[in-house]
Image (cartoon, rainbow, N blue to C red; front, side, top):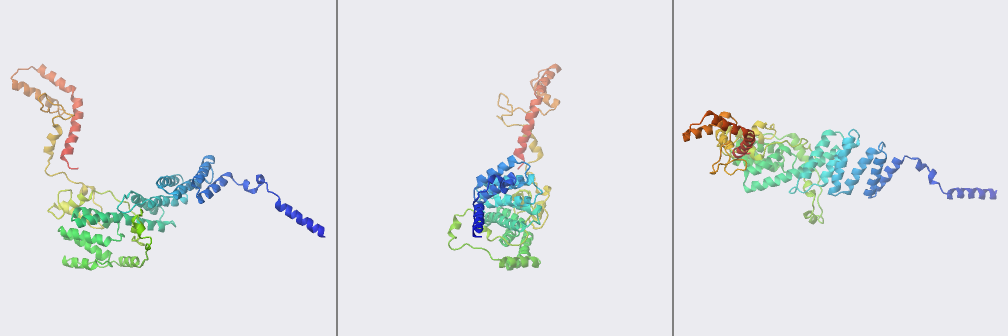
Length: 454
């Protein structure tokens, strides 16, 4: 009995120590594309981004019909995103966009769109720096929320969009405030109007409304100023500027609007929301920080951000001056003042192209522009000049008109020319008609550039 027990124990130990033949292992029976994908994912998790990308690219090139093809393309873009850096972020954005193009109906397409926006978000600079990345991030987040409004990642995208719009509005506010303090009303209103119309969740929107009201009040446009003062009372009822805005409306003899209950609830929630603050040790590092972390602390935490892209409008100078003729607060035309009211008042529809096209200068009539288009200056490269230096008037394309200079010369000299001589002159001018048409058309454009104020 003892011998049999010891023999069975020895067999068990021998089986445990026996080496497993890897060539016949069950792990090798798995698909090779799956093995490649799992190894590459492990390399990326452990920071070996280049090795992981090489494995995923090998999978794409070797197994073009693999079920892991979409995951491999997404994994390559993720590896660039994790590696960070300007060049890597550019590669990541391109990879995510390629994934959306090739696999638009997969559930991961929403994640890829969000990662495109996040890549721009990570590269944003401070409000007083270049805002190209912030504008790109705003567009991508708006695209995500319009395409995937019910996605689980939508709340995160909404908050990121609020942060981005806070940065963009802060940049415009600083420029507008500079001109407001300087006393340049038109330049200040040019920046502040866009904030009031596009970013109502901006943390200083009540101050923007107050400055716009003050600008138009000092410019003798009290009907427009009362609109902005009324917006403070209605949309920002808990602001410190609300009592002063009410006093302004009473002085203008304008009805004071009632506070909006939704605005009261929103401002109450914003005031009660805890916000992160830098510790005493990290405050000195804020001076050398490249990202806009400190400015995003004041961003709204609730409310629907602006989801419409920025519309193409005319310059703020044209809007506020009614085409460049009437000064703000001056005696401009009725159409110009109407354009100012319709454009600046919040909630009004966008102006039509006919309202925003700046008219031509009143001092330059079409009759005065015609001679300038057909008479080139002396020494012009495209024009021809007489031996005496006097410019020669180009033919207008009419045969009779081209023969008039020859007839005038013949009558002045008193020389009796025959009809054959006039025909020869006409034939010489007809040879140059084709070239003169091209030159005259270019000169017309040049003359229009001198007369019409672009």
